[in-house]
Amino acid sequence: GVYATGYSSTDSPDYQFVTAKWDEDGDSPVWSDAFDTHPTHVDESVPRGLDIVVESEADGTPLHVYATGVFTQHTTVRDYGTIKYEADSGDYSLSWAQVGNDPAGTRRYNGPGNSEDVAVAIAVIGRGSVYVTGRSVGDGTGYDYATIRYNEDGDEVWVHRFDHEIEGDDFGRALAMTIAGSVRVTGSSEDTGDDYLTLLFDEAVVENATSVSVLFGIHETGNLASLETDDGDRYEVREATPLGLGLPSVNIEIEFESSVSNPSELTIVVEANSSAIPAATQVVEIRDHVGSQWVVLDTRLTTTADRTFYLTPPGDPARYLDGNDAAQIRIKFFDPGSLFTFGWRGRIDMALMRVLE
Image 1 (cartoon, rainbow, N blue to C red):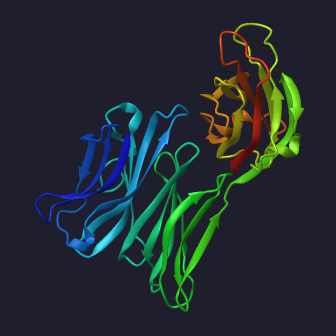
Image 2 (image 1 turned 90 degrees about the vertical axis):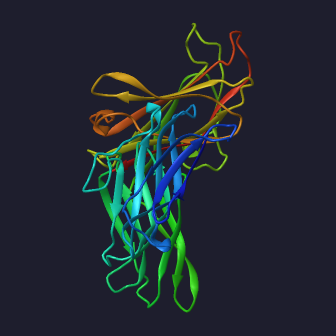
Image 3 (image 1 turned 45 degrees about the vertical axis):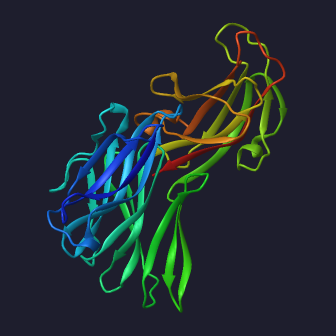
């Protein structure tokens, strides 16, 4: 489906922040939600959605829909407004608990200048880590970049404001994630004129793999260093005939050591593909050292081109670290057909672990 956010008005000044979904035909919305954040507005301060992102399962099934933009207070003041919907429920219920006077599922940010704050970009990484950026009037500093991180429960983890310290305005305009999950915010900053200005937020510790081994299959190319970056230098293992039904043709175990003993978040970043045609099934597991079991993080059909995915295990991240603060994952590739196909390879271009204190 196609998701969009914006605003709508039937009887001015009754404007509403609107989010909607269309099916493949695009004839009319199959779901929409609209609400008014303040009863009166002028044209320049109407509530509106300005960016939207969908968090999905590996198979593309939507989990959550996030929209960000403007909530209003009165006729001259605008605040950041962010909304989270439960897409997997089928009814798109508002997800976050209610805070203050705004509806459940919403979060508002009013900057120190108590004036105009406009969120223009949103991104999600891992399990519900939400990043929002835009422009926000400071206390005597004009417009500043203001970037906010929320956790999956909608708690405000941090707010980072940037002022160039030269008279003029700074506008955050776009936000993106690096391949390892760092956050980059870009926009414009007034100096002698409008200049590009890009900020990098790298709050996570990125751990490279400390060991890699082939549990089943035939190792052909690549080494431990091949897993560090998405540079096309892949760790490749050729399939071997499984020893029984339901067993993988390729099984690779990778270990990481965490420099954080009790992390608040743990995310596995994998970029991989296979040469199998038809597609092989790829499964990623992580060792649960409390439950003494392997937990499946992801199952998907492979493609012949690299795909990157971010996997956050459920529950307390510390349960996935052993007594030496090491974590183990397994990446398995299962034969694509009922009759075994020969000669294809499972290929890993990058495997990293991100941890937050």
